[in-house]
Length: 148
Length: 266
Image (cartoon, rainbow over all chains, first blue to last red; front, side, top):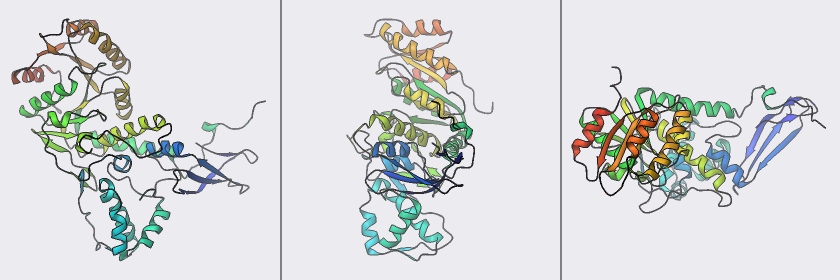
């Protein structure tokens, strides 16, 4: 999928995307010559189809985690299907505030280990000592995470 | 009136999304993961209920008994049975930064949706209910890709892929691999089975897959016919085994010996 600014005959470039949380997706593309911006809006089915391919419009913000599609999309996974090994980190693991832990606990166990690692890596890379709900919100927005 | 604009392939400017590159990276991940696998064999049949999983599991065990490094990928995502047939212990799959450790049963490495799903629950995905047929097949293909590319298979002589009935999963598998898998075909003796399996063999051959041979399962019992011989003759491939009901373990050792594959590196 590409976008062409017909007037300028230039390929439009990805600017940003948003996941409003209702299953839809909005992605903005800008003409590098005239600056015109258009938005691509997908309905839930179209958004799901893109996610099913395991690709991210706008590019990946995270390395591909093992079985991330299976873990992120299977709704009938068993609670104890996966055991996530602790990463070989060179810096100390960030702490989790009580509120952040409670929020993490609401994530299905099938995918929780993967989600926890994403937030922990995010905090570690930025020198954040404690993960709070605010940190999780920022990470979600920056990394383009949906349903996490 | 024509639009008179450049078309998709005319636009070659760098694209931050890099969707084609993301797909390419997925394929590389599969290729790199399977670099240590001597041969991928799809165990398939155009027909359901012929015992593909049963043959896969027992052949895998026979191969392991003979000292071969063997894995089983249960690609029947909606009706997975390989875990039970291999008596895989129910335990969490270990996830490291570089992949998921396969289960180990009777010396056979295994990944199966049965190890991941709640008991008695069907494979269901999160997502919009409306028109789910549009994306469900894509998600199943993604699951197959992750079973291939995200499992720490390590060095294997053979990876047996237990396919569901029909050809769809075979086509997905062939698309994901660098080269089409070799094919081991399972049939039961009946003419009805040969009709369905014939189409599957033809489709596999059209895709360039090497046809290793036919296994006639449930032979010599209640089912009349000689589908194994008929199909082997038609396609010029060996009838590797006729497996009776309640076969002795020797049957599987014989099939293992008849399988036209060599040790990797030899």
